[in-house]
Image (cartoon, rainbow, N blue to C red; front, side, top):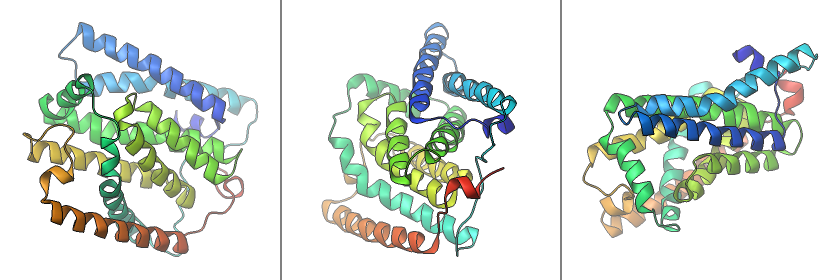
Length: 273
């Protein structure tokens, strides 16, 4: 099935069609939860993601038969950096970015209905189910869909900046709630930038997993905090702003370093399978 995917290079319009299929999948997953309240959230999430991914497999097989040239989903290159020297700073940059964008979550108050969903997912769920759905399935399947398929396809049709923007916007919409949309969009920009600079799908999966794992850890270490609480609710005000300023500096320096040390040739000439 993965081999079939390298033949499918969705356009922007086709990417929005995949979002529609995702929405249909979420309705099916919601129906499972309705009739089986104890259903693992990993199962309902898997069901939600399968419809667009199966569509991509089918389209890939049709494209392969029609003679479309394949384009690898994952063809890592890190410029002048060894692998570890990219992954470690990128992970630090993601943590710094999470701190920098945290105030954006206050732009849209979290509705009580969304709070109930998050409490069920992060507080009331079993730890294994939370890890399976949030820390494993979500990074794997969302990065495969958003970066490995959608953004990869868009990079063959438009300039990298536009491809990164649209893939981040679609990533935000895929979360299906306004409260997460702004931080998801900003993190999506970073993940898209990483994919463009490295064409390494495993790098974006790792970073996505790290982001979700930190949220999981916080919800378990501080279970009494409100579900929409952030670092500002944990640290003293003076300490928080020192940490925030340090995060801004670290983020800018690492992004500059990684940009200088990596290169991004045209995707069409570099990652042909």
